[in-house]
Amino acid sequence: MSREFPDFVDPWKAADGRRTFQGTMPLKWMKRLAGMLAPEDSVQQAKLQAREDAGFRARFAYDEQGLVTIRLSVETDLALVCQRSLKPYLEKIRRQSILAVIEDIADQDDVPDLYDPVLVEHRRMPLLDIVEEELILAVPQVPRNPQTAAIELSTDGAARTSSGAEKEQSHRPFAGLGGLMKEKSDD
Image (cartoon, rainbow, N blue to C red; front, side, top):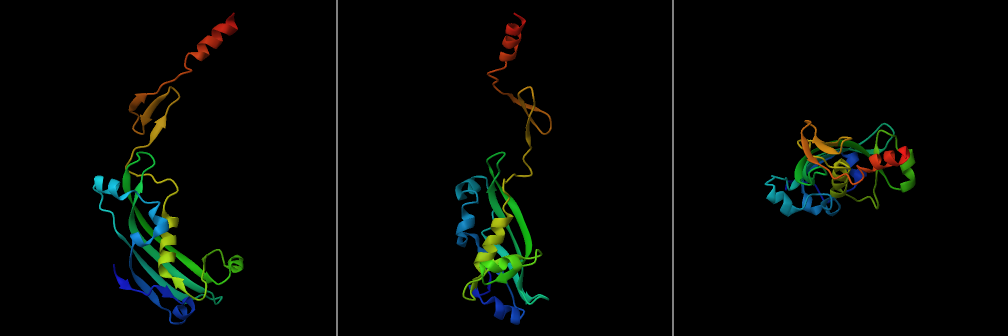
């Protein structure tokens, strides 16, 4: 862990001084993110070299409207479970965003579309929270390992990989029903 930042920041004072904070934070500190990650034992079984921390850089300033802004960049590799193969894989996360600091939830409507609002109470903002939130937003809704071939189902019931090779014949319990119905209609 690299420690060039405080736990809490007063965004207005940081913007006055045009401060930049950067370093790394352990992923194990991010409790909300932990539930989205692959279990540690499956990562070890797959022999993946998952990073244990996330690098970040947060630059505070004022924009033309006088809003406190934070230019935030976050990067790490997250161990996720592929929803095609149900095996762990590493997802490279490289995310940059611009945040606008607000003190009241009602102020979020006044924030320009260019910014994502971040609510700060009592002029104290934990840097861990904004880094964790960026990582949560970066996790794909349906994680898929790009190296896993897509499985397509054909109309004949055979599962095929994206290369076209047949995987296995699926059970079709109503396959003969069409023929029976045709015979009955002929009677």
